[in-house]
Structure formats: C-alpha cells, structure tokens
Image (cartoon, rainbow, N blue to C red; front, top):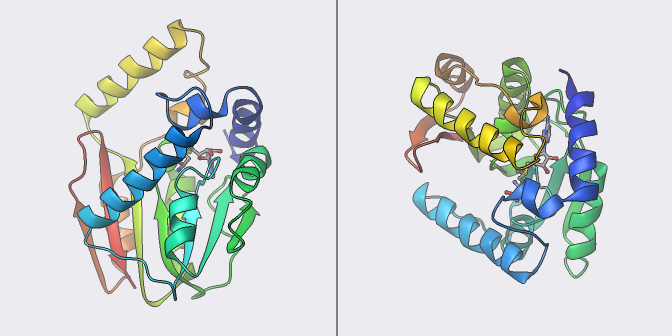
Length: 225
Ligand SMILES: C[S@@+](CC[C@H](N)C(=O)[O-])C[C@H]1O[C@@H](n2cnc3c(N)ncnc32)[C@H](O)[C@@H]1O
C-alpha cells in the first residue's frame, strides 16, 4: 500500500468517526478529547526531558483533528500541523480557530515532508507512525524529520515496538476492533514495523539520540540535531 491508500482510509475515518480513529476511547471531538491531548503533550515532553518555548516552531507529524496541536500552539511560536488526510486537517482548523499560529499542511503519506531543510526547531509525532503502511515510508519520515530540523533542534517520534509479543498484542487489538465492525484489518490501520536497527542507522547522523521508555507497546526516539 502507498500513501494514497492511507489517504483514502483516513479520509473516510475523518468523515465518519474521527474521534474513535484518533483515540479509541473517544466518541466525539469534545473538550475531554482536547484535554487528553493537553495532558499527553505535557506528560510526553516531561518524560523525554524536553520543553517548548514561545520562540520555537514545531512540526507535528500526523496531527489528526488537532487533539495535541492545541497544546503545542499554546506553547510554541508556530505549529506546522501535518497530516495525510485533508479532512483531518479541516477538523483541526475548525476546532482551533482561536489559534492563529497554526499552519496546516497535507502530506502524501509516503514519508515526504514538503518543508524546507533546517527550518523547524522541534518535531513531534504520536500514534501516527504505527499506521504508516510500509517500513520504507516510516524510514523516510524519520530521515525527513531529521532533515527539516535546525541545528540544535529536537525530535520525539513514536514507533510500534519490534518483537513478537507487541505484534501479538497489536493483532489481538486489531481483531477485537474488527469484530466490533471497525476497519482495523486494513493496512492503513495496521501499519508496519520499522526495524530498530534502521532507526539507529538513520538517527546516527544526529548529534545525539536515545530511546525513551514510555509505555510497553511502542518505542520513542528522541533525537537532537
Ligand atoms: C491515531 S491518529 C493520531 C492523531 C494525533 N497524533 C493525536 O494523537 O491526536 C493518526 C493520524 O495519522 C494520520 N496518518 C495516517 N497515516 C498517515 C501517513 N501515511 N502519513 C501521514 N499521516 C498519516 C491520520 O490521518 C491520523 O490523523
């Protein structure tokens, strides 16, 4: 599957049931939904020992309906909110009308970031790489994330954890959701697994990188350029 498969899947998700597809415990894009984004942004930045400032530009890879974007926009100078689905971007824009410091950017879904090299201070991605259907596209997203960061910038990207047990747990989840009528067996939901060795090879060009232990089902890469 290529980026166009992701686009079709996530457009339908955004049109029919965006809250569930973004975070399965939610049914609507209500205040609780956005509050969960605020809490998670602060929790993850704290766990990674990172801080955003009013002078920084942050690129969010896979912003969905802006659940976390709202908090990023309240902390950063500017946010570039990116997503494969134009409808997701439209929902984010609609729910974040009071935030004038957010730019919305549609992606092709194949790993390309149409952003100038060395132009952003910070980059963040949560529960997005896990849906990207090929390891190659995930590798490209990582390489592109490093490319667009300024010298002295940082990134925090979450990937599916490699290994048999996380794979089994993921499949149990996909099947349970499919039984309840969701399209979770689709490759655009199941995503792929990038090899940890490839993450390390790609991150090696950074000044510094490390894996941050947050949760059991994912690996988080923190990198500094
Ligand atoms: C589970 S949602 C998470 C959204 C947001 N990070 C959050 O936590 O609220 C995943 C998002 O990734 C986007 N996405 C899926 N496949 C993608 C791809 N190949 N490239 C870029 N974005 C993608 C979807 O459109 C969706 O908005």
